[in-house]
Length: 166
Image 1 (tube, helix red, strand yellow):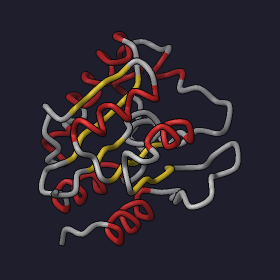
Image 2 (cartoon, helix red, strand yellow; image 1 turned 180 degrees about the vertical axis):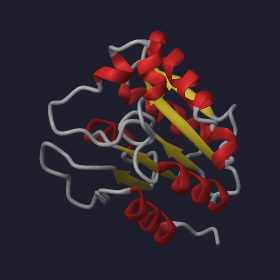
Image 3 (cartoon, rainbow, N blue to C red; image 1 turned 90 degrees about the vertical axis):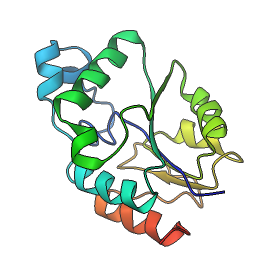
Image 4 (cartoon, rainbow, N blue to C red; image 1 turned 60 degrees about the horizontal axis):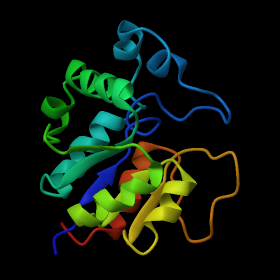
């Protein structure tokens, strides 16, 4: 099976890692204009472009959110021309209502590598996704054996080292 990558959206692609306990009020609670103006995580577009190339286009955004945030996410991705800038196919976006449901999407898609900022998601993905990366600073302990890259360049280096595609 060819390697396939899953990437979370909030605090991974968009918005950057936040201080523990902080909410992304611009994207989640502000106006649509505020949401569209919220920044990508530093280096996210360059990293996604490299990873889409590395995985031969087999990259999906897998995000947990409700309908309102789903609309904002799609609008943000279009506003920032993520498909055009990175090569990530617009059709490769999946949404679910609960974090643990990301495991269902990963199993259906055959995801082999997953980047997400939530420990709970990674617990749900154990046994489903062999290569998992806990993105960004955490407010609690990082489980043993779970790589915790703090930036996009560090994440790309870890994924590249684990990836069998060259």
